[in-house]
Length: 279
Ligand SMILES: NC(=O)c1ccc[n+]([C@@H]2O[C@H](COP(=O)([O-])OP(=O)(O)OC[C@H]3O[C@@H](n4cnc5c(N)ncnc54)[C@H](OP(=O)(O)O)[C@@H]3O)[C@@H](O)[C@H]2O)c1
Image (tube, rainbow, N blue to C red):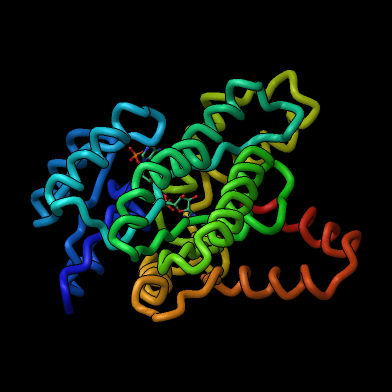
């Protein structure tokens, strides 16, 4: 295979780490980034090229783009926008700054990084942009408003970008995973504790039940897949001559995509309300 380079965000754990390792094995030149120095060290020790990239920090994004393009003589085959987190909590309990934080990472960071890579892809005349969205990029769940809004926004921007790149040989694909083994839920719980004031909330009792479940439950959610399931779809987005706009991962994603097409809205919502009490 000719040298194919890829820049990946959020490689300290979960999907980013798994995809970085898998692509390295497959012969890609992998620039696996993380926001903490100790994670960058760990990635270097695994034989990857690595440096710091924090999606919340424009200077860090600029620095990372400069670093990667320096190493590749100004070329980059692909970008996997992956780093992110989920902020739980009812919509009425979300402060403005909390929603902004969610968007800073999951939307604005992706946009800024993509926009800094695009001139390179346009100049070289090819490229792949792969966005790690979620099943919550096309359906909504109660108590996941911030995360759902961020992934819907990401999908809107990505679909628009795909149309604007028509005929350029630069492809935009969206990956839509359901539950995947990662630190995602643990990190979401930390964000809940940090940012949601549960006691005075109308949903105080629900939060208590959720805390109880999240602190005691060790079993993964039903249908959870290992992160290699995402790697498989990333490989398709990278290696297909005509990458698809969307790649579904996990059974719930396929089921809800189908239900969304088939069911009237009120019926779908009843199912989502029940589903939203879990997880
Ligand atoms: N796991 C799932 O069930 C699931 C399902 C659908 C979609 N996803 C999506 O998959 C992506 C990866 O998450 P994961 O499941 O692998 O969870 P994870 O194990 O929690 O990994 C999240 C990664 O994102 C990084 N990150 C967080 N904020 C960042 C920032 N400001 N700048 C750069 N990196 C940042 C984290 O770095 P730190 O270690 O420094 O925090 C970590 O490397 C996310 O976009 C998530 O929305 C996950």
